Image 1 (spheres, rainbow over the protein chains, first blue to last red):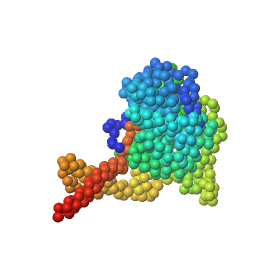
Image 2 (cartoon, chains in turn cyan, green):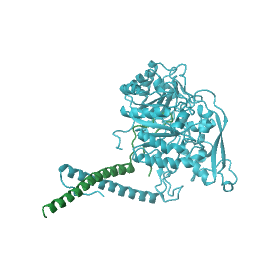
Image 3 (cartoon, rainbow over the protein chains, first blue to last red):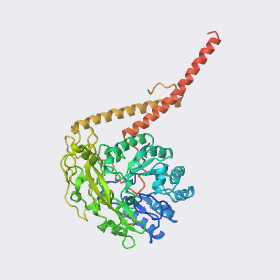
Image 4 (cartoon, rainbow over the protein chains, first blue to last red):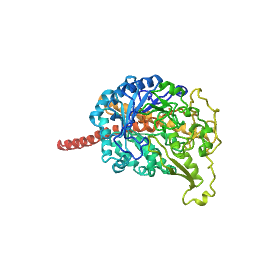
Length: 502
Length: 66
C-alpha cells in the first residue's frame, strides 16, 4: 500500500490537543434501525421522539466546521433511514470535512449508495460480527450477513473507501480469522476491531461479553491477524477499548512511520458524540445519563463544548481519579484507565478497566485473573447501563501459586509516574506524553528508564541494535528497488537485462 | 528516544480511519518484495521462452547438418 498523499484528517497535532479541537465527530443522525442487534448499546429501533430537523442538522454541520472538526462519521440506528441523510452528507462535504457512514447495511441498495456518492460520501464502514450464522443471530435478521457483504462489494465498486467494524465477544473471537478472509475477499481495506461493551442490549445478553482474562488469548491472535492482514492489503485498526501497553501495543496504534501508543480517552477533548435529538456528549458510546453535556437546541455547540462540565471530565482527569489496579499502574498517567465507556458501563464509574492486556499479563504472573459478573440489569432506555462485579480469582489450576489474594492487586513494574497536578476547566488542553519503546521486548516505557522494567534489557543498547537493523533493512530496500529500476529501464530500452534480482 | 507517532482516535461506534495506510519499513519491504516477485515472474516467462528458443536452435542446427 502506498504512503498517503496528505495527513489523514483524524491525525491529531499538539495544537489540536492544546486547543481541545473536536477533530472527529460521530453523529447518530437517527435512532431508527432495521436490525435488532443483541449487543446494541443504544437500543436502536424506533427514532427518538424529537430528532433534529434537516435545518437543524445543517446548522450543526456549520457549527462543527467552525469548531475545527475535520471528520464526521454518520451512524444510527441506521443513518440512511433518515430521508434527508444525503443532504447532511452534502452539507458536511460542502465544508470540506471527511464524511463516512457506519452501517449494518440491511437494504443498503445500489441506488442508496449511488445517491450517497453523488452527495459526496467518501467511505462506508460495514458492521460484520461473525460468520453468516453467528452474524445473523447477533443482528437479529436472517440474511443480514449476505446483505452486509453485498453492500461492501457495491460500495467498493462505486468507488467508496470500504472498511469493516467487528465486535469481539465470547463467540466471535474464534471466528476472527475466517471473518478476515471473507472481508478481504469482499474488498475491505480496513478492519476495525473492538470489544463488545456492557451497555443496553448487551447487558440483557451478557453472555456475549468476553471476559477480561480472555485477552491473554485474544491479543496474540490479533497480532497474528494484524501481520497477515497487512500482507494481504488489509489494515487492522483497533478500537479505543482494545489495549493497553502489552507486547503488541506498538502494532495497534502505529499508523505512521513512528511508533505510537494509547494516550488516554479523548472524550470531550478531540472527539464529540451527537445523539439524534441534539444531545451532545464527549464520545458517541458514553451513557446519556451522566455524560450528556447539553442540547444544541438550548445552547450553541461552541458554548456546550467550552463550558459543559459533563463534557470536560476527560480534560480534568488525573491519576487521582483512578482506582483499583489502574490507580497504581506503571502506565496510570498516560493510560488513565483506558476506555471510559468500557469501565463506566461495568462499574458505574470510569478509572478502573479490567480489559487491559498489560493488566492481565501482570495478574497472570501471580496466577490470577479477573472476571465480570452481572449484578443488575440495565433499564430499557437508550445507552443504559447495568452493574457488574469484578471478581479477582486464581487461574484454574494455579490456586496454590496464587495463594492469598491481595485486596487490590499490585500493578506493574517500576514506580508510579505522575506528571503535573490537578487540572482546571480553563486550562489548555493536555498534550499526552510520549513513551519510549524497548526494542528488546517491544513494551513501552517512560523516558529515562535505563533498564526496561519489563524485560530488564539495557534500553540504550537495545535501541542501538535496533537502529543497526533498520539501517540494514533500508539499505536492502534501496538495493532491491535500484535493481528493479535498472531492469525496467533495460526492458523499456529493449536491451538484455544485465542485473538480476535473486 | 521518545516515540512521536500520530496518536489516533478510534471511537467505538464510528467508522474506522479510512485515510490511514500501512506504513513503516515492514510495509515497504512487502511492497518491494512484491515488485521483485513480479519482476522474477516476467523474467521467468523470458527464461521459459529462452529454453524453447534454444531447443528450436538445436533442432534447426541438426536439420541443416550443423
